[in-house]
Length: 149
Image 1: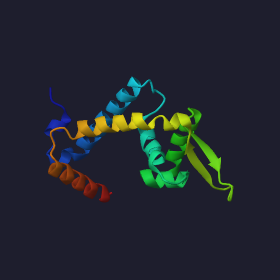
Image 2: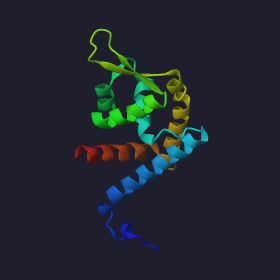
Image 3: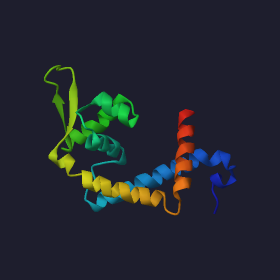
Image 4: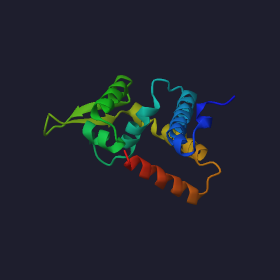
């Protein structure tokens, strides 16, 4: 059985292929999270948590939005869920009360090795049978495509 993508030229398939890769990567992440009995998080929370895991300074909502290339309203909704589930807290700046920092809780910090493990599996799955030169080439091309938008 063929689908509509089979009738597209190679050039036309790019967005469909990227979309399918995104879907499969998210499915892998959700499946791996379930193995750790983590069902309240979505793959989209991962980029926020990773930004917090590896930041050397306190991050504001705007900082996170900028780091993960998302708009502030999207980040706010994701952080609200992380707060609700006890992974992060909001902390007002002692110098300027208009500034709010997002901080990991102990529960959030415990996710770091789990996320590292899932990330390793995601990367090894993504690059299976692809050599280093090909990896660099495909990333460079995708970055060029992204700049076009």
